[in-house]
Amino acid sequence: MRRREFIAGLGSAASWPAVARGQQPERMRHVLFLHALAANDPETQRRILAFQQALEALGWIEHRNIQIEHRFAAGDFDLMRAHSAELVALAPDVAVASSSSVIRAIRQATANIPIVFNLVNDPVGQGFVAGLAHPGGNITGFTFMDPPIVGKWQEMLKEIAPSIRRTTLMFNPYTVPYYPKWLHELAVPATAKPSELPVHDEVEIEAATKAFAREPGGGLIVAGDPFTNAHRRLIMKVAEQHRLPAIYNFRQFVIEGGLISYGPDSFDVVRRSASYVDRILRGTSPADLPVQAPTKYELVINLHAAKALGLDVPQMLLVRADEVIE
Image 1: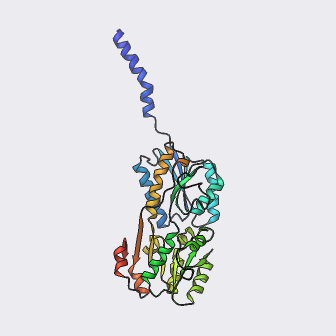
Image 2 (image 1 turned 45 degrees about the vertical axis):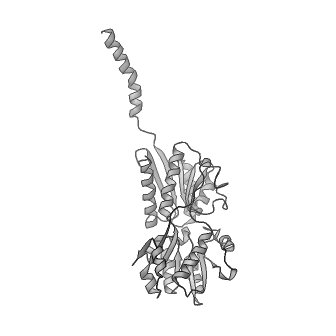
């Protein structure tokens, strides 16, 4: 063999390991997403799609370089705890948790696995993070609501139903324990504040709504809550039976026949949480990622529901609406 050919051959051989390394597939990363709602809930399905699309835009393609597993609690607190225990055994690279009740269960299971939350309220007050700017620990994410929204719900409900003289706030004290504090801090006279309507199961939903509706002039505020979301069809049914104008936090209520909703765009919040999953997978610590607030809110009105209640929706409210269902 000529010397020049021999040297060229050595050069080619030396390049083989580099080529081989370049052809090796990326390490598969594992993400576990825990949902408070049921798998077949339209709200859940849209959130999953928003999350997956956001990750794909960041270069994470399912079954190529990332595996995303989902667990669904369907509003069942025992299931939330079971999935949290499973989380430790699976040891994913990142866990994603939607809702306060899910993150509460997860944080009791692990202090090591990075966790990104979305649709969670008052994370500092609930002890999930040390602070918004500097979360510390293994948890960070994207909040959903803050206290002033309760006053906004009340204003909008009275705007669409001017005859309302009193309002009540329906919530589950286990899933959203901060609402009594938010009501206490509401910047309105005590006589104008919504009363509390705590519910823990379907029986209480029906009984509490019936009791509140005995006196005329009532309006129902249904708090943003995995429990109320999971039981939204029953809540809307009893509100309709007792002819109670009601405002909800999630758009899905109004899509399914509710009167009005106002709150952050849940799909946008979930979509944005994918950016933190991306950063953690690329080496950033959750402790260094500040907790972020919603940036997009939406007002949705159902004119058919308004007509059934004998309400004429003010034109100014219709103009402000992001979506009007006829």
